[in-house]
Image (tube, rainbow, N blue to C red):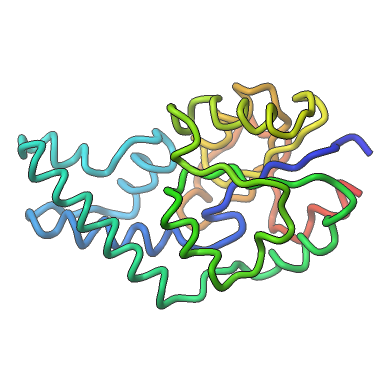
Length: 212
């Protein structure tokens, strides 16, 4: 078996949370008269790895207002997560097929409180050896730091580990850390080329047959 460890992104790979994050962000920015399109969200958040509140900064809104908007958005996102089933089709079955045969961890840009809400009802965390959230590292994706930290935790070398991502910024992070990276494009990222990806998959169900 080539890969001893799989590092999974969370949002858009295991759980369908990105539409909810987009909704909460849109509603927050609308409070100050800013319209956020799906294309802007994909470029700013999923490709560049920046904050959508840069749109408010560009309008000259004060830091205090932007901080209030971010707090409002985060609370609204938490509310949406509490009331929506988010596990993606096939995720549980794939994790069950791989569990015990290859080490697995989640490496996410989600904040810990949101991550805990997401997985309160999924039952997926039992399949993983560890999970890294935004509070565990200094620089988020597309920086390599999250995956370099994951390698340290796993005790594996980069050439024996595989990252599963859905976004350009996640792909950049994984490749910068020296990992093989397979991409499963999501609704917001299907138009991306993913030229750096080692594989571009149609869906999560393909993974066990390629790994085992």
